[in-house]
Length: 318
Ligand code: A2R
Ligand code: GDD
Image 1: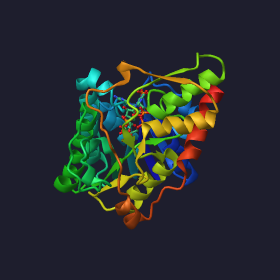
Image 2: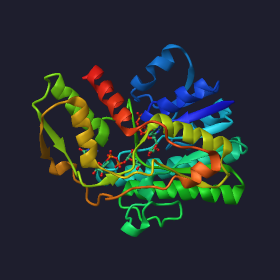
Image 3: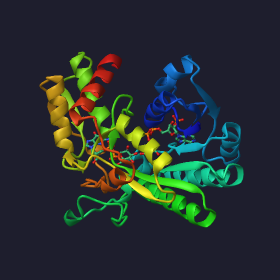
Image 4: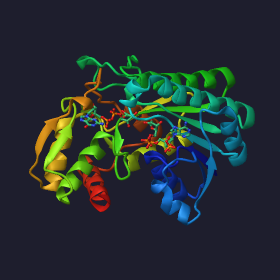
């Protein structure tokens, strides 16, 4: 089987590539000339993946990548993935995510209409959630609170529309927060881990900068999430959408407490106004019943283990 992963140099892309290689897939991945290659350096060194230079905003470039790889499965991960950047550069986020999705679907329609296409949405699509709507199922209304959330709603609905209009095999997911080693350093779990690792190594004063500690998120380990992606692409129903989550909401304060305990450090905490968002999503806590019943997926890695692995990752790097 051949798989094409867009955004293979990213956090999830590198873990998905490892997982698919362990299942004997031939793996192709897209990257940009300027992409940082650290996450896949080990795969490149052993020539385990075929890399194709592609900008997802460019239809010709996307078409060429799909023509060259002729994949059975396409995992479209490439995106502007950082929520705060979607307020500072909304047009760039909408353009990359929506136009990129359109380019993938159009190229699939023309070049390889039988391929199974994974459209990566997000729990950010749900946005504003009322207390009586928790845990959130896939039927929850979509009320995105950021340009990023809006871009993911558009990707999600484009996937659905192409499955209906043209009979494409599109599987959609809404993953809640996921983390683990290689997580981009701007995201909360990695950012806090990195600050603590720097403090532990004497490279930073024992003062941590934080944003909104009251928000709640539902965290899974990326190594579980990539298995979910593969399961729904191979066994899920075409056109359908699946939440991927642990079912447990966790305040960001408790993420911080877990990391403080793992590090064993005594630090003071300072709220940085620049880390606050114009409209943060306050609670995300999902129901994973649908994916469990459909393909038998359940998370296996405990949150504390994920945080431990992430902290170790940063200790080795700072
Ligand atoms: O920015 P780069 O060159 O390092 O590549 C990133 C890629 N990417 C693009 N690739 C081609 N053309 C573009 N215009 C373009 N813009 C971004 O997407 C990188 O390889 C990947 C994003 O990786 P991360 O930021 O680490 O995101 P993560 O956590 O792996 O998220 C994967 C998916 C995204 O669709 C998120 O929105 C969703 O999961 O949560
Ligand atoms: N980044 C960051 N930095 N977030 C902070 C900080 C901080 O210093 N302090 C508190 N937070 C809070 C944010 O306000 C938010 O409520 C929560 O921590 C999580 O922030 P992020 O880690 O930046 O992730 P996200 O929830 O905005 O988005 C991630 O998950 C989505 C799925 O739910 C991203 O990976 C998205 O791409 C993904 O779709």
